Length: 455
Image (cartoon, rainbow, N blue to C red; front, side):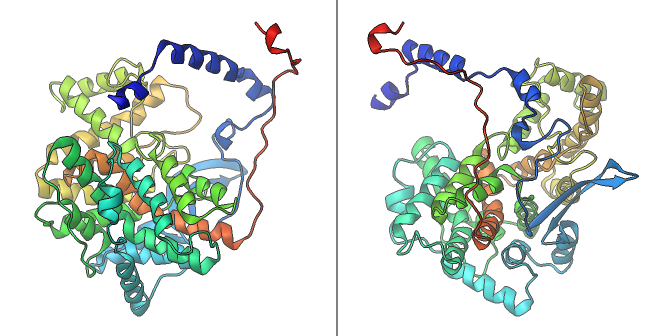
């Protein structure tokens, strides 16, 4: 009852919110007149240079004959093409997440001995404090797993004997612990939600030290702890593709901004989680799955290109699904011709679809991938090309793995904590100034009126 009272939106709140909205609105023309880079991007979509990084590089254009020319997208971790990394560890039948985490943190690929020592270190840290599950995760479980994960991260501050020390060895310890614990915090948080909200049986499986991160996620989640080698391999590839994406992505930039203030690791990572939770950043793959479910519900023959095209046009015209005017999984802030993560991922996705008997659904995704960019280009004036992005297929993969939608974004976080950790170490290593961009005030001076004279 108390929860309902405090959650109620009263007419007075609506009135005050409308007043606040009116006081906050800024004339859009002022952004143009004053050359403000909204979203830290110019009108052509090029990002404003706000920092330097060794950690990763996103390439979508080249200068050719003094003209900025779009190219097929490429992604590099510490100067190594992600495509080569994935071909390397998959061809040698290894899991890659731990190996690439080492690369992001330390700037080089590990040899066999270094990799084993690093995996042993992660396994050593893959243990939650005594009673943490009972006292934190099982208490007041949230319906949103990202909020649950952020709360757990902040609570770990209380279990750390040296939480505010930002010397690099201590920050590295904290980051390695968080990298190791994110799968446990995410899956246990979901199990608590599932038990208390849905009345399902509660499973709290312990991790196994000899297993990879991807294997442990599936083991922790499934009641029978079982998974196929292909399932674990596909999830591992998904983690590697989502680990990092240039210093300018919203959550990595958040990590830099918050770390620049000198705050503790737990606060910095919780802030990054808040960024990733947003549907414009980490939640897009859920929207893709829901959109495709709606497509199947409203198109009788999903093999009919014309019928599928009509549905996609309705999406753009705000006549279908959530009426936001978007085809989810299409377009990217940087890439125009292709998203390299999607291209790498698609081959693995097809193998999983074949194993799961989901070839027909995969064919529909492929059809939408083909039609979507063409329809967007025809229906809308855009400054650059539109391509299918990695979110388009990651949702399909997670659904095929029987991962609950509540865990789609936490899986992203499990991957991206490696990148956030590298960016935090980089920000602290360079001992830079606090990040504080300029905001120009556009309000006029107003005289003060005593309270009795106010309208």
